[in-house]
Length: 201
Image (cartoon, rainbow, N blue to C red; front, side, top):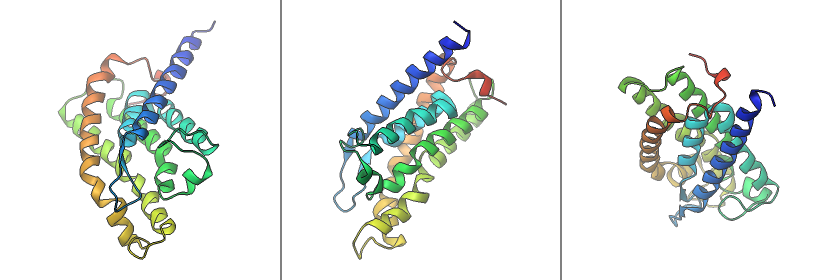
């Protein structure tokens, strides 16, 4: 058995675990009524996947769930299939794996080879969580929502922003703060999850 085999097995295990965390987060949701976009813990799980697993493993942990959902498994919100990918929340779902990758990529560069970071870098980490774990999803999510929803109230970009972005920003900020605190606490004791050879200062 090569030296890289245990690392690959560990990577597969953590990809599976964080994929399961993402699935669980998708089932914890609150429907607001005035919008087809529910509040869920999906973004929080994505932030943790990228921040703790790094760009590569974080991407795969989310991409595999999205891919399996696309082929019909009811892994996200209890439903699956192409309809899930092309429904009102489809624009957000497409961005999930990209979000995990970017969160992991920026987190790895904020940490470099260090296991702990100071307050200034913790602030950078928080900004990265909010920017790449939240705001980036609205780039595709809001236009797609405006395209799909058949409502005079929400079928414009301005309407989609009111329905699919503005109400969620306070919660997104709270998720970013919580994810930052968890990552700062856990990353020093979980240094072997990520493929170390990919980390650069």
